[in-house]
Each structure stands twice: as structure tokens, then as C-alpha cells.
Image (cartoon, rainbow, N blue to C red; front, side):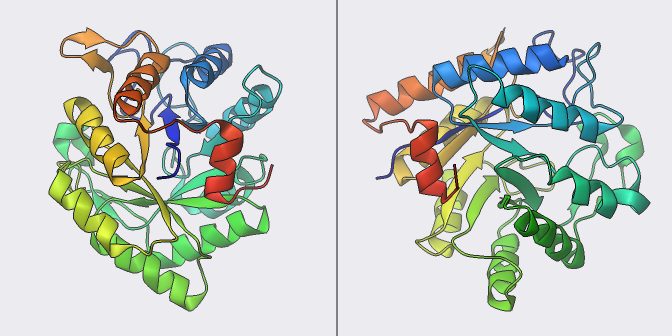
Length: 289
């Protein structure tokens, strides 16, 4: 098996703030400190949403914040980290999203997330106004934003929320809009209109993708480490962090994303799966230095 790539999803989007946990990073300094801790703990990739300094909630103007994250990471002790910037969160002005995303892929990050389909949103996500709202990711937008990424040497990380979106990725490869080998993130968030965090479903997904595609997986809350363990055994890669799960164990809040990274490292060690350093992860993902 390839060495294990661990992604730390440090901040989360609209649904994680200090109302949920006092430990979510908010200020730029706090985010950079978390990056350094996670790098030391064993992460080779960080996935970032823009945060407000005081509340830890979603930044109202994400792009300047995200640009500063990239700059500061490159100047830090964790300068070799692979940086993954979201295109999913902070969609505050739909009419301007193409221009916002065209700018967002110019920050010299390595990866950017690219959602592979639209989702229904629900009241139980914590925002009642969302019911009957669609989080839109139509095919023409996927193609357009992928083009922005390729123009700036940013590799898309394809966020697969349901099994049919694998077929979307295959179709877009056939049409030439996506370039192989792809990197896939299976998002197994169940009730958020995603496929459920279930090992049988994960195995099915892995069986549907070509062998030359790399893949990772994330799951919410108590399922995070269960699905991570499955991915380690299946030869895939793992995402953990406060975007997906704020608990180190039942009833115990993680005080840092690095604690969640370290837990995966311990599991991988017990399963005899070595963990990739950032330079090794770059080779696995086909990224330039």
C-alpha cells in the first residue's frame, strides 16, 4: 500500500464556530498555530475555510482571509504542508461566485475542493432557513471552476457526496473537463443528503473508481475514526478535523485538530500503515513542489 496521507480539516464552514466548541481556531494566528501542530502530529495536508477571528464562525469575505492563510503557512514551520482551499463554503453572493472562485484559485495553494453535485439542505443542520434550499453545484459550474483550477496549476479534489457523483466525474474525464489521475474525497455525511458512513458503501465507492485515482474519505462525529480505520485498511487516505468532528472521544472535546490527527497516526501504526510526509504525499497525489 501507499503511505497514508492524513488531511486535517481545521476550521469547517458555516456550521462550526465557538458556539459548538471553544477550541475551533478563529484568528489567522490560531489557524497557523493549528497548521504547525497538525504537521508535527502527522498531517501532510490542511483543508481550510475562512474564519472570523472573534467567533470562529464563517468569514463574511473569505478570499482575503484564505489568501492570508496560504501566505502565512508558507512562512511558518509548516511551510511544506499541502494546502487545500475550499470552494464549498462562504457562498454569500451567488451572482458573483464565478469571479470569487476565479480569484480564489490564484493564492498558490496545491489543491482546491470541487463539489461534484448539488445537495438538499435541512433544518437539522442548525439553520431553519435552509429547508428546501439547494446547495447548487451544477455541471456547468463544476466544469468552469475546474478550468479555473487547471489554469492556475491547482489540482481539484473532487468531493463525492453520493455514489452517482462518481459517474459525473467519469463523464467529465471522458469529455476532457477533468484530467486523470483524479483525487477523490468521499464525503460520508449521511443525513446531510450525502451517502451514509457505512463500510459497505465505502467499499462500493472504491470499487467504482479506476485504480489510478487516489481517494480519501471523511465522516462525521463518532463515525470519523471508524471510517478512517476502514480507509487505512483499504489503502485509501483519511481526513479528520473539527470541520467533521469536534470530539476526541465520547463527551470529550478535542482541544486541537492535532489530537485528532495523532489518533489516526496511532491507529495507522497499529495497522502497520506508514504515514506520508508532505513530500511523499505530493508524489502520491502528483503535485509539483
